[in-house]
Image (cartoon, rainbow, N blue to C red; front, side):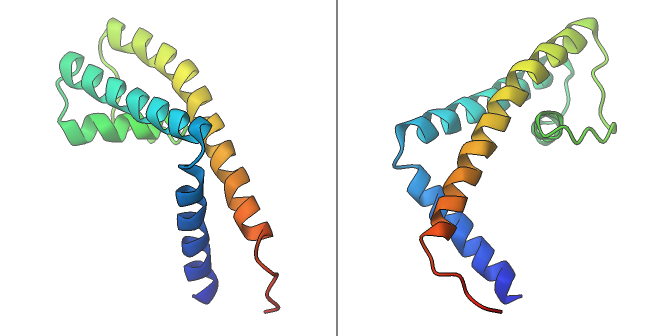
Length: 114
């Protein structure tokens, strides 16, 4: 349990430290914008609830793909293909940048012996 709390604290520190970097801020804005675009698109075209639209956008970009929601129109299917290609790239760069920051935060601390 202590390790879990330590990891959460390190994640919070990494995120806080990362927002000082303009590259990370830009990536955060791009990922958030991508999620918003997907959410609004699916709300308008598919007519799903806002929560379902956001859920589908997140599940799609994280490549989880539960399959409980599926695009039903041709327009949605084409959008989803393009959305995955663009959004997944953004999401992976964002996660990579955050993980590098998290690793750097951990490298700044002495290694504890458990």
